[in-house]
Length: 226
Length: 257
Image (cartoon, rainbow over all chains, first blue to last red; front, side, top):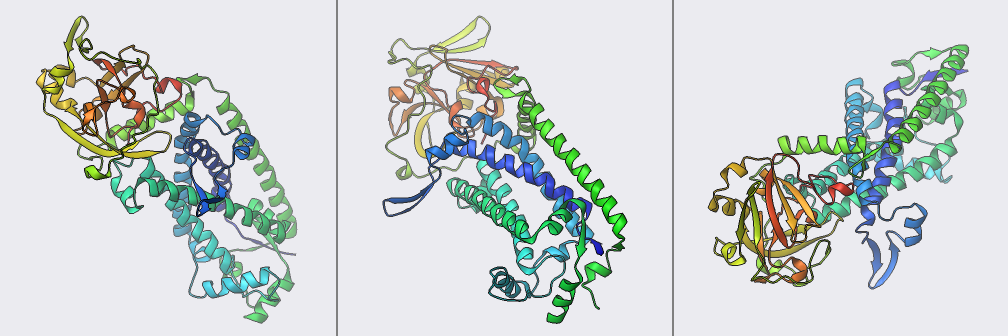
């Protein structure tokens, strides 16, 4: 059995701290959003999706907790921001960013990864720690985090940080963007969970232990392609 | 067999027995941290409340307030103003707490408490004599909606200078109460003295409607709507935080924008 150390301890910490913190940010954000829950997707006068239906709010005990939502949101935002900054700084100084940031080939290869995942293509392109689709996703999620903090500050202090709100296209636009980014996290989370389940235990446990068991067959295959 | 560089350059291969040991240690650590996180969450949610917010969260709101007051707020940061045509005609009425059904402007007086036992009583005409300022800005409710609205009145700073409230300007807070005193707010002095803060008696160039706080209300664009107290009865000044209706119900006291 070949075992290699895959995820550094620091990255595992940042990942598992971020998980509940982002969860709390989304939940408390929902408590805040409810007080003016006006967004929907509509064609003409026909509403296709309402954000959110009353049943959804009731099931999650959302209604009438604006003050509570704000008190949690503006406390846990600190953890979200600090954890995010330290994570990005770590990836820069440790060189881990080399595995995470997409390169020239990534966008073409991500397509091949997608075809492989959908069982249309037999082989994956060769990869290092993360495949091309992962590189794009894990870099995009950092940009989304920066976007959430930016739009969040624009909504939080639109007069003091008026230039930030202006760059978002105004206060109301910043609120919409903040909301869309949050929906983005939920979509990311769902895809992430499905991928983790499909990839299996060995991959999942590496995010806890840091160690991954390498199956020789996989190595040979990816080298054949290379 | 050539391996990708993260296998060979940056990491060592690990023996199976050592892998088992390290994996078990990691999983135990993970479980302990997970329990600690759950324990922390339960602990936090069972803390006593202070002014309607869980105490640690109230303390955080106050710490945020300190940072915002000292490092972020700048009296030169003005709320964006709009041309008159952008102001809405149907201005949203969102709160009637502490409001009388009608107020007789001829008997109404603004009580300006200069100090205990020294109250200045001013009529609406006294206030209208002072320089008038129009403020057309995006009024923001803490609920999340906003509306471009048109108000006019005397800047609070001008008002305080005219009535020689210099000593009061040096205090940390302004407190306001409705005529019936059932709604009350506190505002930090720098925000109160910001040039767009007005004692407002007109909306869309007409006398304030009763449900918008006739005869006099506060318009303070650097704060959420909860601070824009309607039907002002009393103004006072203090170094302590004046009681604040919504801050007592779990909201951030500062509520600045």
